[in-house]
Image (cartoon, rainbow, N blue to C red; front, top):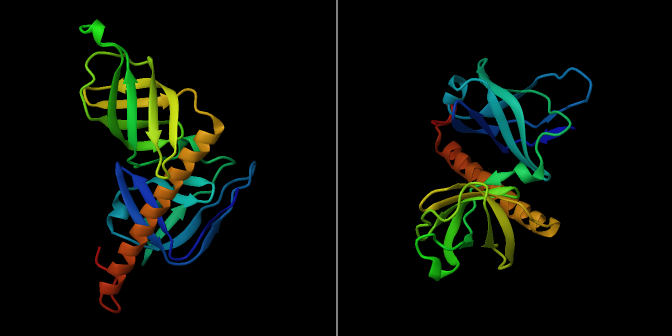
Length: 228
């Protein structure tokens, strides 16, 4: 699989627990051929000098088919240069693409053991991040000890266009005001809807970073590397 990187686009180096945005100076194409030795692509970039110190990590870029992650690092050979390894046949599945997306959510919890007459509890909240494989949400009310990891509960998520995805999820972690869960019965149409929402959010996030980088470039003095 080949990956094209346009001049002026922004990629993110993820290493040492940090996310460092980098602006691509000239276009590049990273070629990956199954069964052949991979070569390293050298890409001129503009970014903060901390990109050098974080060392080897993964380079993230958003493509039409999702977020692609490639091995890479930044070196200084007179200018900042991003060294990127060739992609494999599959770099990331649609279900694994995760973004910081906040959407209204409704969770139906089972009866509390100490209040058996209360019936099912409906708790509202908002997702903090989301993928077609699951989500992390903050709830408006405390959950108590009503479910355990591995239990299945019913949820509804309202998408930006007003559509509601109603499905069952498996609880991964439940705190007093937080829920981390994995989708267990998401149909293809709902998977596509959620994936499109996440992709759109990621594209907007990268576009905002590009605009910020352009503003910083405009403020930099002529003949000097922009101050990061």
